[in-house]
Amino acid sequence: MSSPDKHVYSDEVLTRYLLGELPSEQADKLDELSVADDEFAWRLNAVENDLVDGFVRGELPHESRKRFESFYLSSAKRRQKVEFASGLLELEKRSAVQFKNTASAARRPAWWHGANLFLQWGFAAAALALLLLAGYLFVDNTRLHRQMDEAGKRGQEQELARQHEAAENQNGDHARDTSSVPAQLNTVALLLPSPTRGIGRVEVVSVHPGTDLVVLVLTLEPNDFPHYRVSLKDTATRQEVWHSSDLASSATGGRKTVVVSVPSKLLLQQRYLAQLMGVQPDGAAVPMGDYPFGVVLK
Amino acid sequence: MHLKNWTPTQDAFRQFLDWLDEGGGSGGERYLELRRRLVLYFDRRNCLTADELADETLSRVAQKFQEQGEITNISPAHYCFVTAKFVFLEYTRRAEHSHKSLGDLPASGGPGEIAAAAADRESELKERTLDCLERCLKKLERDESALILEYYQGEHREKIQSRRLIAKRLGLSGNAVTIRACRIRNKLEICVRTCSEKE
Image (cartoon, rainbow over all chains, first blue to last red; front, side, top):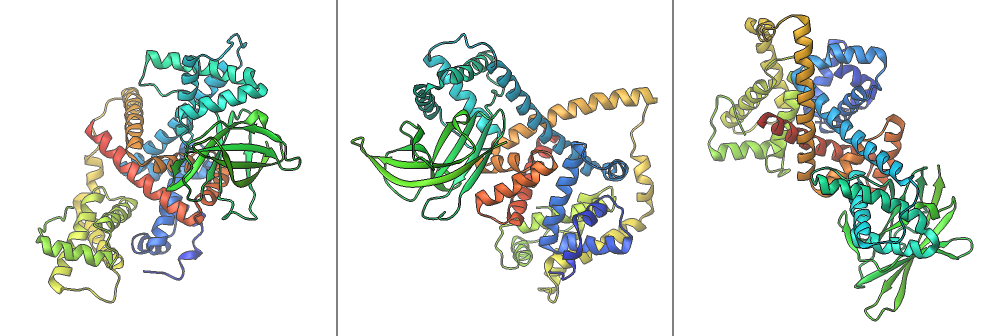
């Protein structure tokens, strides 16, 4: 069923409906739409989720909160929704606390020198789990090793050492309790379309203070290269500011992609080009395309 | 699938599902979605037995469909709603329901005991919900769990901006992303509820 007047209902009206505040005539109409109209039913579903999330986050205005407590929470089913939303929020908070712990560990004096394998794996494991929790992308351990090594060669040893130290601490926790969730690095991801499909578009990534890695996801056109390499260049000067080691491709959202993590400390507020090269079995690199993107430092 | 007070033949039930699908071939998903909406409708009407009333509604619709062979001039979802209204009216007329809510209240001690018991229960419930949520998230497809964690996190403004970016990244309209997120959340909520009830 499609109702021509369903669009007149704002989110505010839907919220009042969910809080039992509408006159019965109007509520009857919305009852009907909530069952018989697909589009309306999904919209109502979305508004209800946001209402419940708003309640558990303490974002509701005073009157709405009171109404929520007196009306919405009177139903056991609706209380279950609230419990669920609280759980989601709790997960988010816990992952934030874990990140904070990692960050604070990273600020300790850098007594750690040199990269040993144990620490490298700890770093990679922490990064992997945190990327997972952040809802972004999985970055495999090996790739992070290589990127770390590359960054190290480019004078980033000290910064990465601090990150390793944090990872080491985290790794120690793992040894004690393998069921605990590892700490996370603060990452921000940017999906870059294939150059042939994204002509004219420049994606922008916002880098907030405390961001450790900018994860670039380069979408590939079909090809058969066993490995790839990414060179990051300043768009204006064309000078290389960083390059990756050899990377494997992976499938992200049904698309073939190359995922590369760039230490955010290297980035300034400007435009960059991520130049992708396919690496042939004999080691020769073949240019595949330029992925422009901009950085905004927050 | 549970149809209250009516046991259809396999054939009749399949035909009923096909009719609900309106050619969509959802494999029973449409039935579940309509049942979910009916439960919510009865629940918003503060019915104590929303699940039973939703089943009663679908049972009546299915029986009617079997008797008549077809129901025309009205969409299946709309027909379900019309039937639900009658079920609701009958529910409100049954005098016992008006007292059931009070009768269902558990025996309670003094205010102090209630508060202490409630706090204990809340804490236990919270841990159980979290445990189930983590387990259920692992059961989702990787891109589904990533989407739901990203879509529902953050404060108000941050959330709006983040959702725009998700839509852009996935190459979908904001509406399409919202529906996808709602579907995943519904699935997750059901999983968490089932998990919590088992424990």
